Length: 60
Image (cartoon, rainbow, N blue to C red; front, side, top):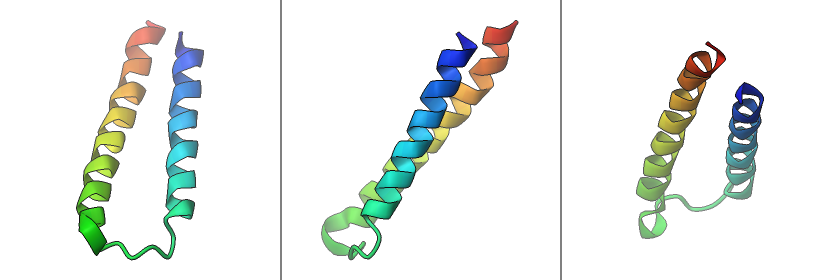
């Protein structure tokens, strides 16, 4: 189970890196994009942290 969790965390990290590269040079203040981006980034950071913390409980 821990191996699957590691793969999910790696996939999320890869997706966020791709998103960062795709939005490079984009005007971030138009149409509230910055606000949406910040909310999504915080949510993904929280999810990733929770998944990493869950790894130790799964390994027991």
